[in-house]
Length: 58
Image 1 (cartoon, one colour):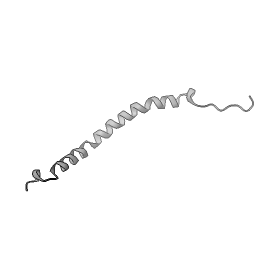
Image 2: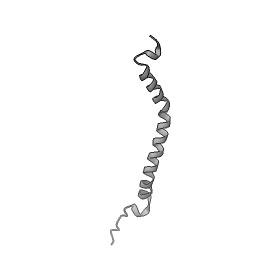
Image 3: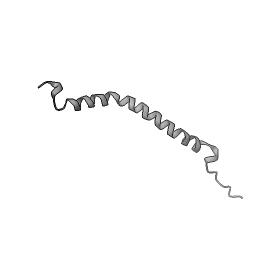
Image 4: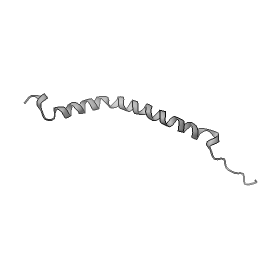
C-alpha cells in the first residue's frame, strides 16, 4: 500500500497543515482580541469610569 493511499493520509496531511498554521492563527487571534479589548481598557482606565470613594465628612 502506498503512503498516499493510506486511510490516514488525508488525516495526517490535515494535522500537518494545522500544526504549521497554528502560530499564524494565534497571531491573528491575538490581534482580533486586542482590537476588541482596547476600547474596554480605555473605558475602565479613564478616571471618569472609576468609582470615587465618598468622604465620610460630607
